[in-house]
Figure 1 (cartoon, rainbow, N blue to C red):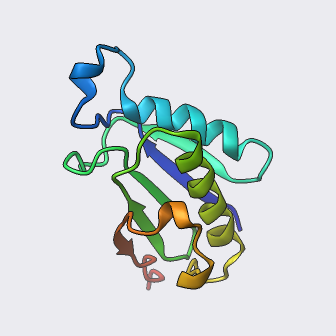
Figure 2: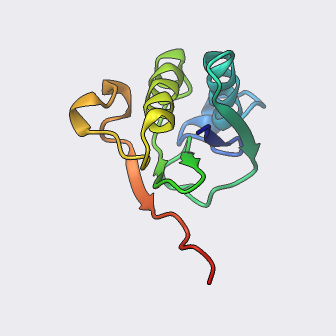
Length: 123
């Protein structure tokens, strides 16, 4: 089942203003994630805010009837984007959404913020 990567394009790292650029760090990371995810079967979407501003560059990996995960505190780099996409592919291939820690790409370790359990079936 397809997993989604939701990317906060409004995120700004602490030094964003000093960089003197108009594009947010989140938008730069979104560009890189979308490029890395192209052709993988993963879905991506951009949102303006995930309310994780203190961590900057936040993403959410989720899929229908699977555990989802919020991750943050990324730098807007190709390496970060590739690690996120690699993890999301593993999430997509997992029946429950859980991926064993030993399989996580190094680039996502230390970035997990929270786990979101799937919604229960409606009665």
